[in-house]
Length: 136
Image (cartoon, rainbow, N blue to C red; front, side, top):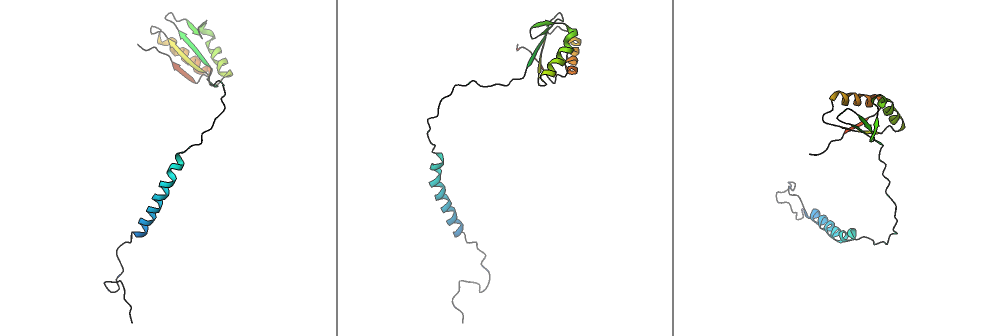
């Protein structure tokens, strides 16, 4: 004694996907997001105290080394003998390992002078070397 059934083919499995529960869940999520979205954008207004403090900028020490057209060397705008450069580089690197060398050289300076200065800086322990140029 068989009661009525929804099977059309007698006992074959149903091959269609029932999307009604999926649509129901998506509509519920949509309603939840519509309700909660305005709450996330509101902010609390506070009257914060004002403080005047200077910003602490921890800049590494810089060595400004310039070589003029005559081959004269200037250490931080002060004349320096070429023979003392290696010792001064070593002393600066010993005091601050992150010291930076900013090298400016006249365009007519021989490359040999610049190369020996760079080698002396590297042997003295200077790791950061930059070339300073001027825009035309």
